[in-house]
Image (cartoon, rainbow, N blue to C red; front, side):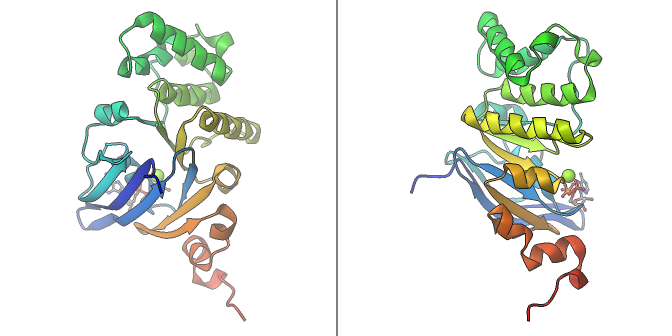
Length: 245
Ligand SMILES: Nc1ncnc2c1ncn2[C@@H]1O[C@H](COP(=O)(O)OP(=O)(O)OP(=O)(O)O)[C@@H](O)[C@H]1O
Ligand SMILES: [Mg+2]
């Protein structure tokens, strides 16, 4: 069996007296879209931030293609091939769409022409070509979200981490975002997606992880996971789960 693209091995993170993530392990295969679900405060964003290099795990390893990247700085993690989107997208407002899409390109190259060509190609991919020269602060909220995705893609990641990509989107925008993420995968990028909107996770994910109170409580196919009693209990409480006869 070949090594997985990402192997998270027993990572933990404590904030003072609070164990935000405890002994979390999972694998993500090349080409996979993996969804990460869990109720508020479950530790999803903390886990995400450890993988993206924003927090150093207290314990454990994060292997990308077999190399431990835990504790590397965000820029080095980016260069290693992990891209991320932020929950609050903050593009450079005074820069145009294409200029924003050029910034990440410098992680891979110093050739401005090549970087610009790539950025224009990403603008087309996002359906933002008509707005390529628009300054980012003039974009709609949803176009800014798409730009945020494009900025992550411009670093040419092997693995893309996405946090709540449809927060605040209308249903039709959510559908458009789901289609875009599928096409990201078709480009050969693997995806780890944290999302509250169950429909989005169900539509996109090949496999779903569920965290509760810092720990992994389920790992499996979307349909199996969302009907598991442990998962229902985590979301809705003990009384919701109908005892098996
Ligand atoms: N920087 C921090 N300092 C102290 N406590 C934190 C910090 N970040 C997160 N926590 C706490 O760690 C726990 C896990 O938080 P985290 O943000 O990872 O959860 P989450 O699953 O992303 O939740 P949500 O669905 O609400 O985004 C929570 O109890 C949170 O209050
Ligand atoms: Mg979160």
